[in-house]
Length: 305
Image (tube, rainbow, N blue to C red; front, side, top):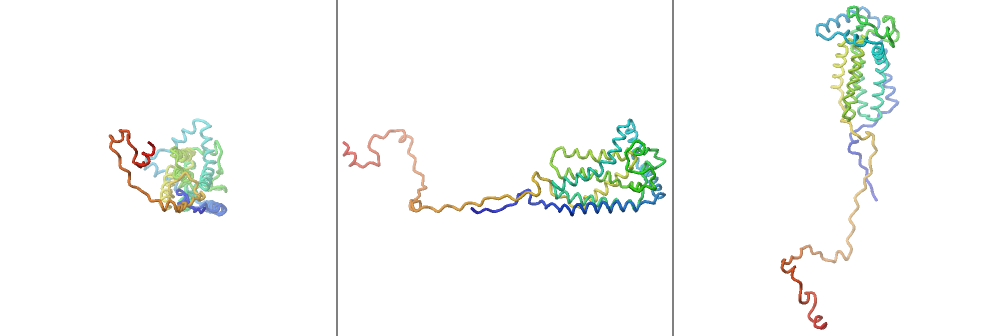
């Protein structure tokens, strides 16, 4: 019996999963370029402090809430502030990497989309880090904020920002901690269909509290990151809504329709009478027959007597 192959309806618009080795090399290359670019921004200490005073003045002009209020809430005990420091250190890269791995396995089309958006946002952030070095609020004297990472731990920054060989501490704007967290939430909302998927917005909200409460970023750092992410999302085309089917589903085999059986000689010779037989009146149907039936001949009746 012949058969024909049809693609699944929901998987027809899906794309193939990109080669794993190529993606690993691409993501690793982008990360190294970003780290190297941030190191190039070192050495602009005086400019970074001058920009910090400008940002602090802009926030007061815009009547934004003070970063100190958030830090005061965290400093009510050792546990909240240590948890915030740990969240700042450990969740940033871990959550973003897990997000990309899950998309790569389950939603290849959304993975390519998210990777392109993150690359654009990170590239724009690197350009700002080079052109607008900014000291975080924990270094600003007029802010009167504590460096919670140095006091309570853990931290990834050195005690002397000017000589820190691990990271550029004068790259506060924009906050990639917040920008990446917001993209993780938006990406998971777009790639899933659960009614609870909007709870992923708690991740960037908690990240915002952490980066401000630990005095690593200003409010404006998160606002600028959101603007850059919005521009990247407008440039990169969003994939089709997620479906329950795996995007790389194999095509299914549909049996071909069977040909009609040829009519036999007896069926061809037998005439078909599609005319319905006339219905007898009700009185004739209810009255029992007395005489011989119409099918019997008179000779046969007489022979039986």
